[in-house]
Image (cartoon, rainbow, N blue to C red; front, side):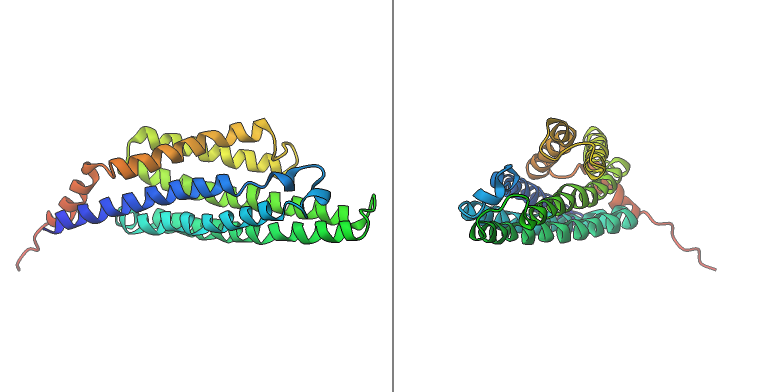
Length: 245
């Protein structure tokens, strides 16, 4: 009975986690705001305020999706490796904090653009300096700090999967390689070697995104493998008897 209940709990956790990953990816797609990345953003963002607010809204929706994934899986992961499980969920809290920061920054572009237009759009003004600072800060928050925090958590998560075989080893190895590439891409952005809007940055992040999609579908459709559960139950039930003095 206890084994059956554990299996049901793990199955529910896997489904919730998979749905959270898919929801986070969909929200991430809709959080993209092209008008902010456009060279004429100071002129255009004021009129594109619905797009900016939509992006901020969907970026806010990413926060519960990112955190929900970790919270759903934490009870399962903790039983196999408490240290890695705590590190994983801690990294997700940090990533969520940066997601919220990025969402708060977006409406500031609308305010800045309106002030720029009201001032007569002066060339070489302080508005342009402020705008570039805002864009740089947003890139550092979204594409460096958040991605590194999330990727470090992914390294811990996939290392745990590789050790426990809760999911196929090839998927865990894929996740480790993808997370390492994502961290490298963020470091290149941090040091100014690669712009955020570039094919190289997208290519370096593509393996991680693809792995997360496969992970989500696998969690929803199949859940965790049966072997680790059997081992876990055996470790609980097959304990050596205490010797009677």
